[in-house]
Image (cartoon, rainbow, N blue to C red):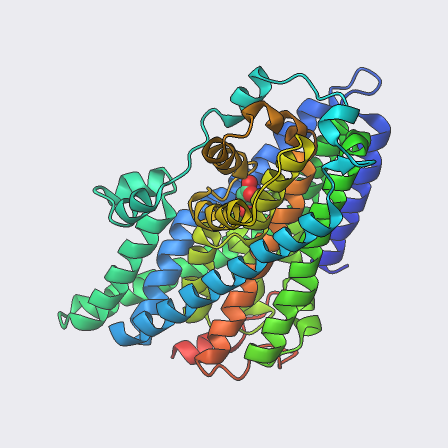
Length: 433
Ligand code: ASP
């Protein structure tokens, strides 16, 4: 059975087993077992990130040959990111105003539903989460110590350094140049091989991660917040199934269905891990080997996307803040709503690509608007499951960006060639030359 079918089967089994047996059955501490196995899988994915990203970017940029080419690609990538995230936040604004999930029977939800007691839980969940401000993001781009940047998974620093390294590699004329180039190309190949191995155990990891979430929170917790849950899922679905496919079709001139077929292993892993950074090796793999995007493009656009492009997160932030305002009967003027849109857009860039990271951005926006921070207790009920969905949308948008940029660079073989099957290296090796 193909790997992606195995992962899907594991996901469905996890929903079933998690809801039937819970966190403990017949004295067996299932919850701890899920946490142990799931944690191992997630760490195995994260283990790949630093060497894979560094080697891919250096090799990609070095083979592009000129700083101009890199600059052009960076420009297109950023334009795509700003555009797609703006569309996502606008969708949230429309859906929340039309659906109004914070109002039930004409009354703000806080008057009809007892709010869960919170306080400590909110601060506990926010602890350790950090949001990078705009200037901090710029500062992070130039790390004082590249080893430290790698150790702390500071992706922007790593990306920036690797791009510089790649460009410099095209400039130097010393005899060691080819050795260094070959070395990084070799590291990249080795990391891709290890990614394949980690992916082989993905069905087990996915099962443990998802069964853990379902066993712990259960799907029934969603009920009191069902309207909010559905409104966010509706918004995310419109963005992922209507807006982004239109972009793919109109700008990249490629079939959204073929695209979906190529990247769905990455979407499944994003859904299970709730971490777009952790999913990065899988996304890279899917784009280069199943969609035929060149390594140069994928290894530049995807790491940057996982770090700063978060459509699902921005949409969720905007929806969550509007929901809390509705639930507390706060009337937001149009200018306030525009402010929320802008804040969601800007803060989503600084949100880390790890589980539940957007909560800290939501807390910040609530603070700016003077809305009660305690209201976040409402969100915590549904956050875990919504995190899975929005992370998939984050990854989906990064992948769309990679195809769009690849097509703008004139890569004709993207999503046309059925050779790009699992395990088979596509156009990239040949193109790398
Ligand atoms: N979990 C999300 C991600 O990794 C971030 C968030 O919205 O909390 O993409």
